[in-house]
Image (tube, rainbow, N blue to C red; front, side):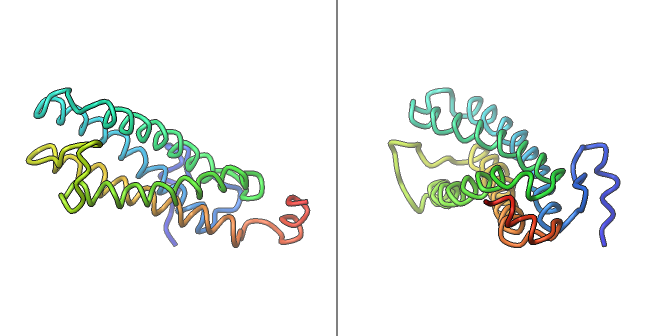
Length: 172
């Protein structure tokens, strides 16, 4: 069993009963923090290399995605510290966000590598812009989203930290 006491300083993995779902959501929070930082680096790299003229659609989608990821990284961290029954509604939102975001990330990855061309969104990046996007979006972004989905599903479908009768009474 992995010792998560080291992460006590991060405020993660502090649920009264630490289940696999809580661990997944704690890891998702860490991956989300990595995504937020690397995404900011990607924006700086893109602006330095390619300029600020991405088009309004790209800026709007980028900012919306960044804010949502930042928010859900925080929610994953909070969920890793809570009883699943107390955080059930927010775990449902984490799950819904993750499902939608996985679809968006798949489309984004296909656009990054030029498989899908959608010039109204953005032009396929090259060089440092492409590779900074690979690190932030493909590596950290996708890992964050998949981990959040798995953790939220575990806590929604089969919570192991509460008595089954407590779940039924909470849902009524």
